[in-house]
Image (tube, rainbow, N blue to C red; front, side, top):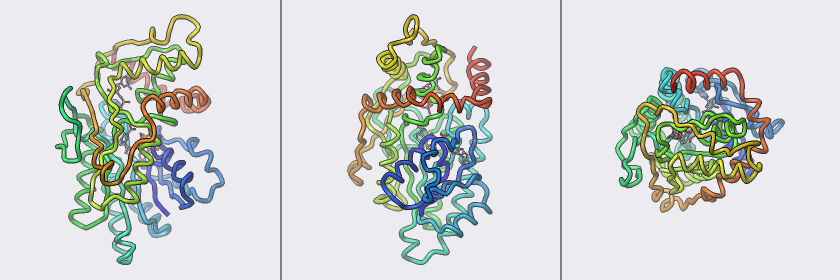
Length: 355
Ligand code: NAD
Ligand code: TYD
């Protein structure tokens, strides 16, 4: 079996659903269920013996050690993290605790467990750390996309904490021989993404007739990948990646934020017939920019394409259409996660910070 951490979050839950569509190998899912963890995402696995959910913290060494000894996984896939840049600006502490200290403790427990394996098991074991392109910092308009050799130059407390965790993972490979893999992926979008990130926030706000807040001029560029494509890349890296290596994951899909919001509004208009009066585009509001806002991310995905023969299955046009459709069809899911914590966050980020 495999141990997945953070499997109740956006990418982790998509990964587990995708895993069960391809394999009968059981998954232990260790998740702390922070505001971003939502077991409803995995409701379809209720009663499925392949999914063992454990509520807990990757930083809880005793718990992780016990789980590893009991279940003896052949791999750990670490999704668990605090993942939202704006939250890291308002309160970085949790990012340091989970992304750095938590990953360190998980590595310690994994290393101790790995040393108890026989030689064949040791060789086959993998610690796959799911990371982000944000560790590389910001590109100017014409600079080449990030390769795996690009210098780490993180800008936000979030990306700095992910960069630190990547360094720790590499250190456990170099120093102790732990068979690690790191993936640095571009911005994901798709079903089950918490509506604090750009694309789901825009869909949910537009449907509710609320403003669509664009940070600064909206010319910042992100490189977008449909979440199912990230999941297929992770499966491929787990299966065929070389221990100690890093793989960038992306779909060559750079778009300015303002263009994303226009596309979302256009699809919503097409699928709903538009709001009662005016147009979704009328809701666009430019608000104060994010401090330290990275101008551009772009992933050079040639290594994973060449060495592991991986390619994305969706174009941006097909992926964004599926995503808007999913949010329209799953408004109950959106309603149910709009808890007090989510509303408090909106108040703190948009009402107190950006006026
Ligand atoms: P998310 O915020 O939706 O989910 C994170 C999950 O981790 C939640 O279920 C949460 O409950 C859990 N968690 C948080 N702290 C924990 C702890 N201490 N112990 C156990 N569980 C904990 O995040 P996501 O968007 O699904 O991202 C998953 C991973 O992928 C992160 O490591 C992130 O850095 C990376 N990543 C995300 C993107 C993206 O666009 N979302 C892109 C590239 C890489
Ligand atoms: P986000 O989804 O937070 O991802 P990241 O910061 O990790 O790339 O933001 C994507 C882009 O959209 C980023 O440039 C910030 C911008 N943005 C807005 O303009 N308005 C918003 O309300 C949010 C959440 C993001």
